[in-house]
Length: 221
Image (cartoon, rainbow, N blue to C red; front, side, top):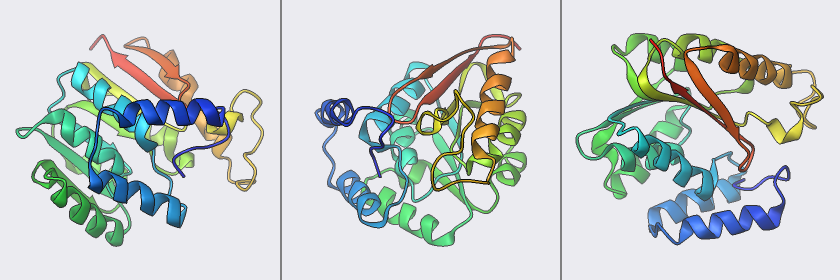
């Protein structure tokens, strides 16, 4: 599930292969193999490397993930924050938390991860302070609420990042993504994207890799 049809598969594989030149880790390979075997949605190598780059660019030390799965994106953020940093993870499935601990411990990154099993927004509300990066990858119907909760918790100079903001190319027209009819997720993503871009405190763009990554830099208090 690291590739999807919105981006030409040849381009997707090219970006993945380039990203793979910069990072060799058998644990990362295991995580990607699990995603492929079980159809589990992860951001994939090219986006993962992009997330690490973005967090590193703002010298991130505190990252909060709204939705973490079994720790694939946290792997990249944990590399960016370094040994003194912290990545706060949230997921409703305790099995994902256990897998994340196994993978990230073997990768030498678990010491900088704080994993909370439960609702992502409740986890954010329960964690004090601002963040250098808040990353949103929950079920898509929750995107507007996540932006509302996150927008005041990012420090000036920090980033709000969000995955799947193009949603297989359905957001321009508002049509449902096949297999997800009736959930209202396309409309929720459209509302989310408009709200982020309309906030004058942020400079925002969408990078069209994989399924679209929104990058919003907070420039005003």
